[in-house]
Image 1 (cartoon, helix red, strand yellow):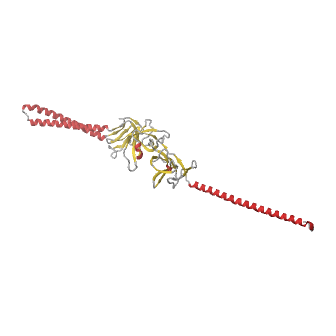
Image 2 (cartoon, rainbow, N blue to C red):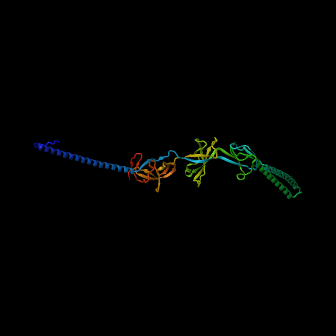
Image 3 (cartoon, rainbow, N blue to C red):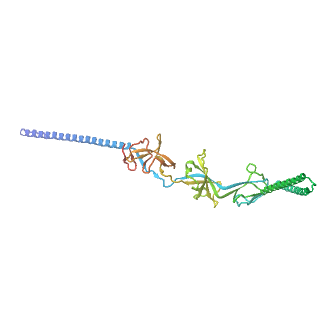
Length: 406
């Protein structure tokens, strides 16, 4: 700004221009202040609206999280019956432990373990010196009895011939006749004694009782043989009929009504992995063992090829029939509390409804429901704790709320 003094003639014009400049400055300041206020107001209102929107979203999210999310399944009818697998034991169809009927020393044996024999085939022979002497004595006693009987017969005939001449008394004739009858009885007894020793001598030859396989030999040449069964004598041989084998299995009592005569099962043994044999039920004990809660069942399996061995272990599988009306659900769908055994379902209105059920068969990770469910029921799998009748839930598959609190 110039430092020169303003002329008096130009003084009023200058002051007027200065006033207008100040007025413009005041208007500009007011406009800036008003605009700032508007901006502040808009910012405050926007913040309030945003906070309200966030609050509504938070409330909606909280409400959504408060509703349990569940998985819904449909109970499935069984297309095929379950498979019951049980351990079993193989035994020969017939097994005969063979003991000596007479005492002596083993003279020779002709078959060893694994030999196939036929009925009546000689397995071994026993030397019986004591029995031989007893038989010889019995034969001598028979000869003596026969000689005495012959003499008594001759005497009786002579006395009977003299009876008509009054040379002898009737009493004497009867006495001679009675003596002859007694001598004949002695002969019969002696003959029976001889036959007994002959029969016992025949037992010196050990024979097979039926067609089969020698599964045991517990004697050797020169061994002392004692007559008798277990306890008195030792088992010499064992012969088993293995063309068919008996299979014994302990069946839990709740499955017994489903297994009856004629029921077939699949049998497997460790020696032939992957190979299956067919067994058929032929008998049942019809009684429950109080200690194990099982019933002994007997099956028959063909062993014409000789692959199965008596005394071995086998795994037996029964394919059980489908129970009418049974529905399968996962075991995780079951709820057991103070109300008993139940499952949670969704009714037609979308409400949670608990139903009392009974288990027909436990299959491990699943169960067969015997009563309490219908095929069109929607079952909640793994229901959350605290779920009650009428509660609202959302289905995991669609993420939508199902029903409303009734």
